[in-house]
Image (cartoon, rainbow, N blue to C red; front, side):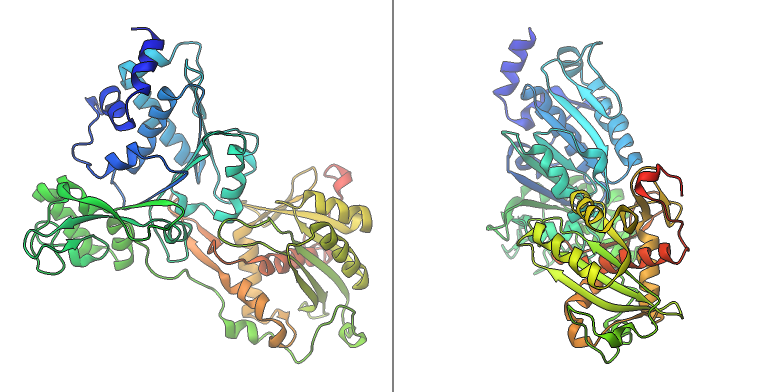
Length: 531
């Protein structure tokens, strides 16, 4: 059979048929017989799809198979796969994706050749389709420049929504498809995965009780019987093979599916497998059991500071656009931090914030002025910030480099290159280092840790608390979470539905103060890395 005949044949089939007739898993023909809830997911097509999953429920297999199916059924289709880390992407590429391609003879024979590229980060097919693989948890820079028809986010709970997803989704700007798939295991109630779930259709696999005839779905340990899933109303055992999907929020703009370990038929039919689930219930923490077995979010993210901590830093003065002479008492110098608006996302609106700190002889940072800008006129915002920095005689301004390259350039032109530096968050062994070109690379976790300690130990001074409500809300939006990357890494994140811009403006301003105070070496942008 020619490739043209093969392509015509498979295009006329739905995705589950292609997967079950063309793909191989662990040396056997792939089958959905023991995963009946996946047929709808394989065969449906929505602009945005979310799989909210427990661990070990064939989530990665689904991402793998759907990627291959799209690649062979849609000529010139471009898929972009994103996970939080390089290691996770490499494992998916080699242990999942490449293995499926190599072990599935029809795919290998009809859609690959020695001339086609099959590297860790790119797979190409003879019908013109390609799969690109990359990684991003909080910095999407390495993904810029790709073009895609579908973006798949794996382990989305460890990807910071506002920093990554709006930027990566721009890779589909010129696509006729524009499909997005989110896959993840839930964590806290404020995590990316939970916020996406709240925006979704919240489809649950419902099962009708053979006893009381009530419909059940699994989202609490109450469904955990001694030998299988039980009806939470009468205790009769349920058959997950006889379930069907039901939307709890039909108006959700994302098609969302909840998949728990408890609804896998084999887990209910093989006593040893169910015994493993009951053992997890007895040995896991309640939060871990909910996340990894039930596939539901639990608890609130951990915060280092409270509203009381922040209010303890308040003093009895007010700030105004034009500085009052009394504000300058004991101030050695002034610096500014600017967090530029990223334009926001589908879940909240980002704003530009400028923060002016005055350095006191005892090392405490005093709030001289701040402003949270509406996102109405970005060019005018820059002009206003230039005027504010001049009025407050800022020796150095630190601007967010993530989305602020043009705005920072305008600041440099107006204030002088020696008075403006760019800050880019990332992950680093050092708090701050020069990139030998145009910006400081700052470890986000270490920087925010330091800022939080400033709040806790009254290393900063704020004006009267009545002026600080919005700024405090931004600071309190940030929380700590431990990722599942390697042995676990602490990161600072925030709910995708609330902003935290004031926190970052304060942090950038603090870093500017550290540079002026010679605690961080100052490099000029035009000096090519020489101080």
